Each structure stands twice: as structure tokens, then as C-alpha cells.
Image 1 (tube, rainbow, N blue to C red):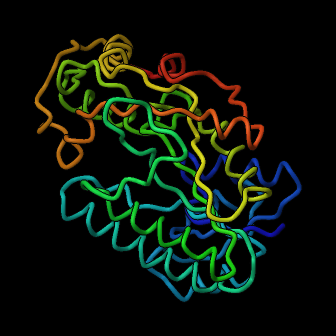
Image 2 (cartoon, rainbow, N blue to C red):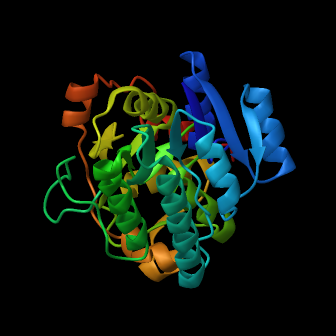
Length: 293
């Protein structure tokens, strides 16, 4: 299958590209910068130059492909306005990709986060989260899944709060970056809130499985660790960086503070049973031991 991918040179996307190529697919990767283009080409992908806001380029990429995987997202969380702009850009991109695939029965694999369900771990049958700072992403994904009635085999991979590789990535990676900047490995609240996690190489396998076989309109959970306590995450970070570990106000984490403070465990029982997905790589707390001082 010839697959058009956005975000193919990021921490998750590079793993997905390698997984696809390793299983006989060919890849056309969107690349905004020269560095990204070089990275994609070195990995073995064909390159189409452009960014997520270049809608004509997205149409061209999707037109040339047998299937689409969307991963790109601006990681600017510096302000609420920056997050809103990133969500708006991604929404327009997904609308464009979906429109290009109408009536083709080609697969369109998009991405969202595992939902927050009060009092219990979320499952694949729970609705996508559509409220909060990044609620617009959930609404955009729901629209993509709605394309199943218009001839698109659309599916969604719900990623946990941390997708990691070699000690970096996701919310845990943000905690590490904040700790380096502030000199304190901080956590909001009492630190007992739980974040699910998955290794990027395991997540990549699930993206491939969804592309190849997932039924239209379905959502899948790329979850290995159902919920590590944030205090435990901060303690590993503090130990690796030689920094004190302390509770800090949620406001210290900017527009993501409310999300950081929430208890958000999640399961993947149905995903494992239905698609035969089985994570094999290190857990988050094990992988964080790769953080370098």
C-alpha cells in the first residue's frame, strides 16, 4: 500500500514510517523543512514538501496514496491562543484530507487522545473528549469518523498522555523539559493522578494494524501502561536530573495545567483482542531511565 503520512519525522511518525516500510508498504511523507525532508528520505520515504497549512499539498499527497495516516500537530503549548491556532490548523487539514478521500473506500487513520472518564479508566467504547483546551481535536476526529458514511474507511488511534522513546516524548517529556528549565521536577496536585503511556515503537505497530485491517468508524487505544502516578514520573525525572521533586501549582504548566492535574487512566483490552496488538517495548518508568543529566 502507498501511504501518505503527515508528521512522519516526529517521535511517533518516524516509528510509524519505519514500521510501514518494514512491512512492505511505501511511504509518501509530508515535510515542511529541509531537515525533515532529509530525515524522511534517509528513512526510505518519498517526500512531498509542504506544511499542515498547505491544503493543496495535502490534497496532492492524499490523491497519490492508497491510504492516509495523519499525525502532524503543532507542539506550541506556550499559550491558550497558540493551542487554539494549532487545533484550527489541524482541523482544516483533516477536513481537506477527508474530502480528498470521499467515495474511495481508502483508509484514513487519524489520531486523538484517550478520553477522560471520571472515576474509572477509559475504554475504546467511551466517546472522544471534546471539551477543554484541546477539545477541538476531539470534534475534528469525530468528523473524520463520520466520513464512514461517505466512502472513507476512517479510524482513530487514541494516544495516551505520554508516547515515549529513549526517555523522551509526550507529557512526561514536557515535565522533563520544565524540570530542566526551572530546576525542580514538579508535579501538580498531590501527584497521585495517573497518566497512561505507550512506547512509540509499540504505537507504530497499532497504526499499521489499523491501516491494514481496522473496520470503518472505529477507535483504538494505543495504551500499554494504564496509568502511572505523576509523582512517580516526576521522581524518576528528578533522580535522573539530580533535581528536587516537589508539588507545584497547576498554573506552572500553562494552558495544559488542568489536563496535567487530571486523573486519566485508560485501558486497551478491546484493541489487543480485536487487532492482536501486543506491546513489547519498555514501560514509561523503565524508559525514563534513559534521560541524560
